[in-house]
Length: 611
Image (cartoon, rainbow, N blue to C red; front, side, top):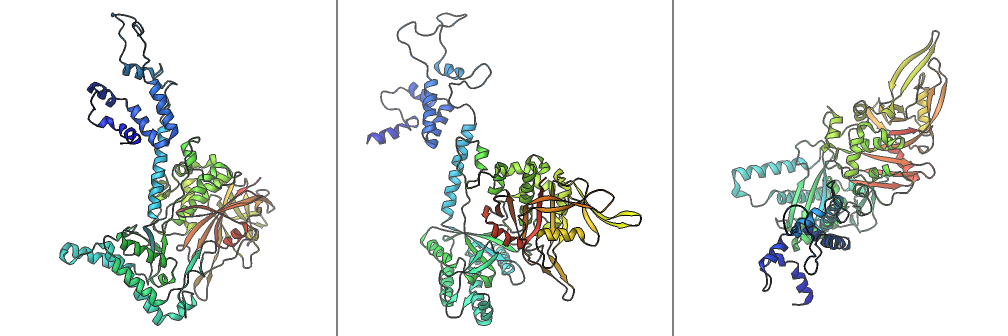
């Protein structure tokens, strides 16, 4: 055995039979070492040189000095003869404590913070390693709900499988996960054939299919919120796709498919637009071949007839926990954030709020926008949202509906797991939050012979509805039209530090009886916004106070209770910094021209007073 092997084996001598020449008492002493010494040995292996130095320091402080000859032992004072000294272990333990029951300066571990930091780093490394492994076996499939959805069929398949398992178990040879995946692949093959035979021209018009090449690849453009045709890879012929799907069905078995299930079960009447399935494949040869085929189906247009989307698993960005920073600061401080951005915004930029079933986007957007607006004014005045901000600093991947503080704020909000109009949600939420920064009152006045008459008024705590005129010149034009509409509208008294504008983008077509959405951009959204204020309480004269847009809620979709919500935030004037926030991921920086294009989707706008 080599010297290195012998040294390594020596680390485990405590758990082995003692060799010749070592008495049992010596072994017993080694086994009876203080827990702190064993803890230092563990941290030595997990933290490198820093822990090694700490272990050496501990060893030097916990051993009694040895004197030579008689009389070198310290004599005891008080009763008794011979001045017998305390046992070495007892002296070592007591010497570490001072009179005020705190660790002495000679001990290398002065608090539990070092141990907590070590454990946090270890857990983060484990999580990163698990996510790295999942990159080679995990996929996400989204099935659209609605009239043509395959989800009701899957529900019936699952019910029948459960009945057979209960009443006739001999007829079932496959677990539910493999049965559902085979059914999905077979339905996908059937719909491809039907599309080619009956709806080929529709597929060509939508760029799913090219006559002489086959099924195309289309990539989702998050900035433009639309699918874009990809030049590479090359389209796949229909026969090639059908052969791949048949091969997939033959490869499906309990060993190759470890998981295929919806994150929220299979609802008979789904409330969300998309139902999220997770697919985990095995690492054996059959699972490897399935992985190769599924990679060919990523961004493939052949998924559209099924109403499906397929994507790979993404790695969540973890921050390296520095030994020089407090743990909560290190965990909540994203990299690549400009230095001029205040520190209290960093947890919001790093936040990746959960939206597993696709219905929490309106809550997530409202949460980020409100906290960002409050941070633009005064973070110390967050009111009842302060505890939620602290939760976010401790954990960036927050799931709001599992947070007690958030659910208490919601109160009796009906069907929170269903998609809602975000404006209606704020009408419910804001009176319950009662934020001081939104204190204010606007009025609509008209002048009569008897004097000024107030026609309407409302609190600035609620979003102020502003119409979007035809051929609007920008956000300032919308505010001016709101102020001069019918009579005179402006804020009375003290202006609120923060206000929320509800941009009415939907118009009713009386002839057709439908709502149409106006997607006009707001090219001046990053400029100073002037909000009217009545000069006195008895006339119609106005002053215009400067505000700055700090956050916007963007809505995508044909109806307000459907589609998707995202948040756009802003900091600074020169230069203007803009970020785009979405569910399940950290914020991404935006250029100012891109933000102007995205302002076509602006639905709710938060502004902070500048004077």
